[in-house]
Image (tube, rainbow, N blue to C red; front, side, top):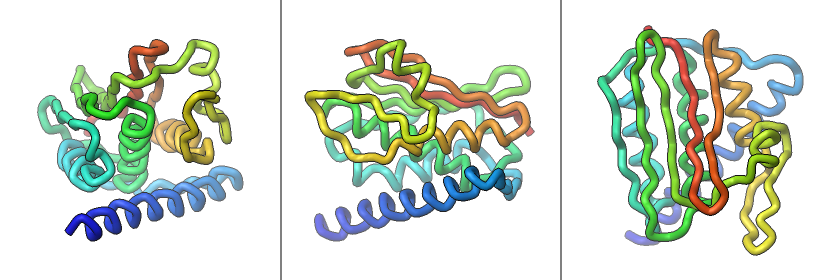
Length: 184
């Protein structure tokens, strides 16, 4: 059973890398088509958390969702953004810490946030996090990655009308990555 769990989590990880590279090619060519559909945001949040649990065996993931809201967006691409945020939180936070995935509805917008109590990011790096191939050098820790996940996340959210994305972080205290989309 443990081998199956590991194989499944590695398959999910490989799938996400392939999707990221395919999306990167589309962004570089100025094409990122959106396959918009209406869906309940909390349903996709719970699906992604369930898929990510094998990768988060050293962490507790808490889901704190507001009222379930329907949004019209590219479901697969929004799922990729949430997966990227969760993957980064798992990768850059200490074992045994809690990761919180929240959704919050305010007026005509819904915001999704992934918070960790990890290593955090200095203000000078925060300005560049969403640039293509940018990676923060954590000299004492070597983490895998290509520096395209947050770049693609920003491009995906910006391609949705009214979409916003950002980060709030403090070195040594953790990070919160968030995005907002219109309701409906």
